Image (cartoon, rainbow, N blue to C red):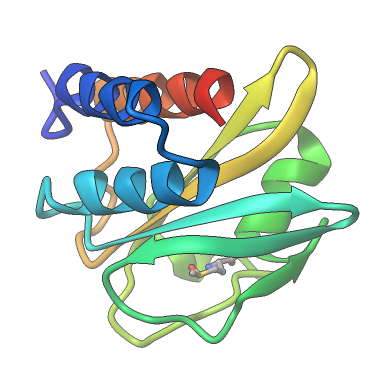
Amino acid sequence: MSVLESDKIVTRLRAAFNHGSPSPELLALAAQLIQQAGAPYTSVYLYMLRGDELVLEAFSGRETEHTRIAVGDGVCGTAVATGKDQNVGDVRSRENYIACNLFTRSELVVLIRRGTVILGQIDIDSDVADPFTDDEEHAVRQVADALAVLL
Ligand code: SME
């Protein structure tokens, strides 16, 4: 069981796509629907990979000044550099963590991939310590996999 109802979110994203919503709208909708799940989904950021930088293209929750992150930097850039999703239960455990605010305790980054190509990522900040179970991570991946097809 997961807090995130990924099936419902994927259905909403497919409906928006079928009604002609362009990629920026799909990203904004995904951010909004994930954040609406409530705790532990405090803030949701959709970064897309543009060259060797991640560019913030939609978010829901707290604003961030980190609108561009180089591949390899922070938790977000590490996900791209290593090709691995990042589930950081305690952000203080990561030396290269890029802080957006003082409240965030944990972070989950799930890559949006089309085949072997990384398109971007869903980055979730949580005020809750270590909340992202395997089921929760799986639910976020369902949304990321849907976006990979629809964007
Ligand atoms: N914490 C991220 C930076 C992005 S903000 O969380 C929105 C990182 O370490 O890469």
